[in-house]
Length: 631
Image 1 (cartoon, rainbow, N blue to C red):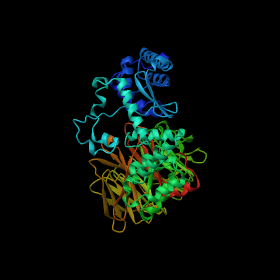
Image 2: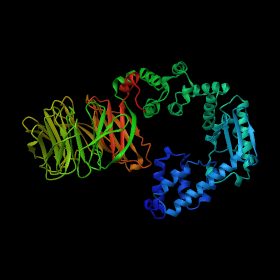
Image 3: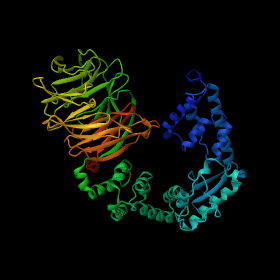
Image 4: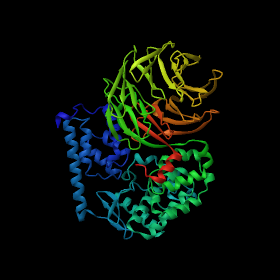
């Protein structure tokens, strides 16, 4: 065991690292909240202090902690510290078992009804429902009537909690206020008894406990609780307050309703007061639950004019994969997979819905920095240096190694017909390679600085390239002749795309999207980003070239990111969604976007391990009617 342990003492840097490590995997453990995690790390040096702090907050340890906790701290602590930790957990576990099994120590016990009971165990109030422990209630709200004379205006415990702050919650224990554990126990008993005697009136308990309790009581067969639960869930859902509606879905509170009952609720909602922007932000929270499809179909019908004019992408999935510093990514033509380049020099194919790896192919010496998939799915091309490797997509076999650039390859692009591969490099050259022979067809060398981006027109007639010299070149692909050069005197164009009708080129910098009219060769429109707060890292045009979707990266990274859509015709911002990274504490920089040929899927790669998937809302609804998407 000792050979596998980092024997460095737990310093401040290690503590921060440990917090991130633990939080990342918190969903796999029996950890109640972030406060526990903070206590875990900072109090590690004193096992007894650690347990006392937890107990004072009403936290009872789970025996399953012992193994998982030891595994984590094996990465950060000395051998002796890990042993002490495991011994401490085992000691506390045995104490808990002894206490719970000794009738003499079960001093206080109270039954509210045949379903709800409370006992004072190990100094803590334990609530049980139908004989099973219910770990939801953490504290009693106390209000001083002499200091708060406006209590008559309070309509519920939720309102009281919102009105009176809880600043003292983390700073003082009940004992320090002169409240014994026995008094705290009877306060809990009194509250629950009053709640029950008043027909489970949800105004008398905070919603954080009343709703989970009602749900549990419904599950164990309490008929009265079931009726109240349905009524309260329905009343809150038809309020039209989107965060509450999303919360009811996520907590599975709506599962108590039949499809017919839920349909009745949908009829009672006043859709005119629904905040559509909020609805778009919370769309992901409405997926995969009971009644989800019913609700989303109704939303589609109520806002049909909006959805018919604007493609709406919903935040569908998030995948934590292997490391990829440059995060090159591309969607396959069949829309079933995405291919991603990794730090180990491999190309990896993943299921677009589940994120499960399907196969590994390719073999570069270092991290893959750029890749592209041909429109017909015949080839994948990738690079990590001055050479380009072409792979047969079906078999994964190596086809060609293309050598000729004098510096690193920055961008790759297949022509739409799959005849040629175009590469751009730091050496300022654009090269066109014949895929039938694997030889160089021609070099286009009119740029004066490194090549940044390439794109082909949909019909294959034109090629556009941008470089650090602030120019954009438009080429005739048949003759390889330069048609025109567009010069942006303010900034270089980091990424370019040509419209499906060949009537404009869209180019981006960190702060702007510029539309170049190909009749006048002038900038027709500029969309500006709040560059003091965000960088525009990547964009994609929708297949009809009517909309552009961009990734806005917060500066600094802790500000997070945004997924934004603009209408090309007038530059109007249609909507913005926050980019949620639910499995990470530290936000990873989103670098690359790729859109499927049919415009249904958009994938985004972050600099590290994260890949995000967005799905067209209307397509999702139609597909969900036929098949169930993986959850």
